[in-house]
Image (cartoon, rainbow, N blue to C red; front, side):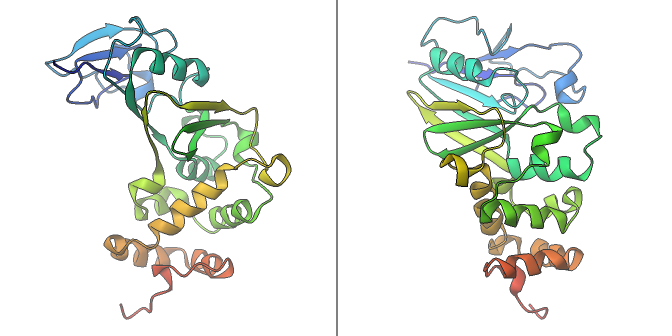
Length: 249
């Protein structure tokens, strides 16, 4: 039996195996930088909204939602709809590391506020959404992860530094099967007070892993040269990464 694959908000970069594409804005492309909508030849285009997908329950074998959920007003309803129509799927958004790091550079720039949420997965079965507002962008958890990230962001220009990190650090990637949990928070969580995982733990882990990737050594050495203070912050918090290699490497 042929698989039915739904791509939600495909925009100008659709999933090539999609059989159906749902797009809210088929003309102006405000949420895709004005780029023209592209629909695979094998796919059927349906005008619709992720909050109320025009399909019966269980219509699809796989649901692909890339760079969509960070835009919606009610991600809990959107996630319910995704699970209602599909039996498995893939979700991708920018990571909090990228979102917060870039927004902190210029809190007055309108380009940073088309995305409404920090999206992260503290485990394989849960997606968490924290509001991305000017107030929350400037807020950090009081734990060591939050303090590390705050010092790290203050040591560099993320607009330049982002190109030195691997995609896994800059992207939240989430696979699901059958169902997954969704938590929409009202503000940035402080794990020392709320006893739940904050977003900064995952941000720190992803950043450290990226700075230990031998395949990106040339970029890490460039990063170290551009932002020497960042190297000292890694050392301060006890991280032995490739940034600590000698200059002769």
